[in-house]
Image 1 (cartoon, helix red, strand yellow):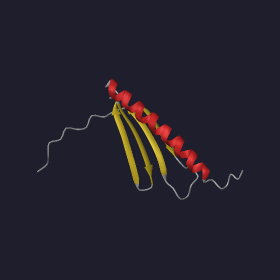
Image 2: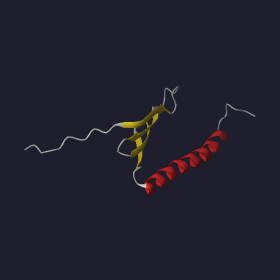
Image 3: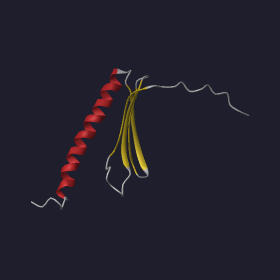
Image 4: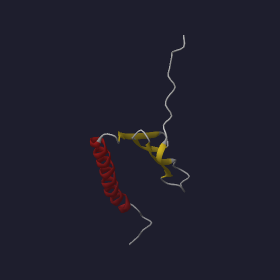
Length: 95
């Protein structure tokens, strides 16, 4: 028996940015996709080969806006710190 389902309301995207994280790599298919829908849903999706992570918040709620900004800031800080550690291992940049 078929379930009575209401059709999903079409959401419009107000912000949409996709980028490969290592566009010249032949070994990695990693990407980041960021979206904001007109209903206030904000999504960050990071994917690398077989795994992905999705971070989202509802921008209609002031606390969730603060939460999303905090997530973005902390991700940025952690990645900058991690980059410094990875750069130490970069043997192509002999000093």
